Length: 146
Image (cartoon, rainbow, N blue to C red):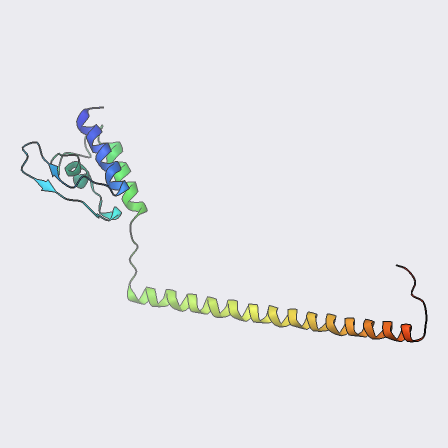
């Protein structure tokens, strides 16, 4: 791999890590570019080229040796791209979330009420058994070992 492309791979890694060099100079030393705090979805082949110290057009899709890096940049940007939704779609999405939450709340309420009903039945059965036990003790009947 040629040294210029190696520098581009290193620049891309620095940009992904969020640690670009603060000042980048081109060969002639005239251009200084700062990419501190650059959002991940704003990384482009031009930005990577400039971070590597080349001009913005250094990486070209028609050069076979550049294609893997350009593909990696595209995939990285796609993975970090913010999806934009129109207002209508956002409102519909929020309404669906609200409806889903209300349905979930209703299901949980029914489960809670069923659970409390079972607890109440167990409580009444326990009291009934305790009362029968007290009556047996009152009659002086021995309990059989379990």
